[in-house]
Image (cartoon, rainbow, N blue to C red):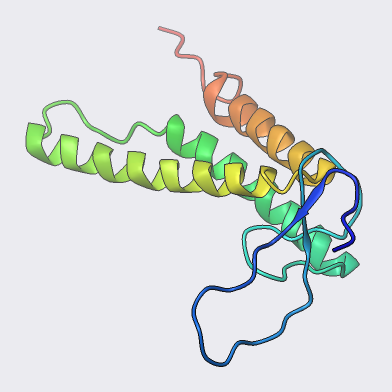
Length: 139
């Protein structure tokens, strides 16, 4: 098997019987640049420039949404404790899901994906967490 530097190949599918033969793709073990990436879904974006740009926008948006949910405070004073905890637990679970999707995308070791994730978290923090966009109460 011809291995490229800093790559490993995906193992063959498990199980017997008929198997589908797919083109092998490499799993990088160091950062690389280029649109030849596979992340989040098998075979996507698969080297297509438009799909790669869409994938970067998706990772950027996922990171912003994760920051939004991390700074979301919709609980009103006097709300039922059980309802409050249940709601906050649901929001936390959704935020964790978005965060893990970003982590999985970054694990592709694609430099563009990494930058999209970091910029998404930075923009999300500035907009939702820094207080920059919050109105100042002048009383």
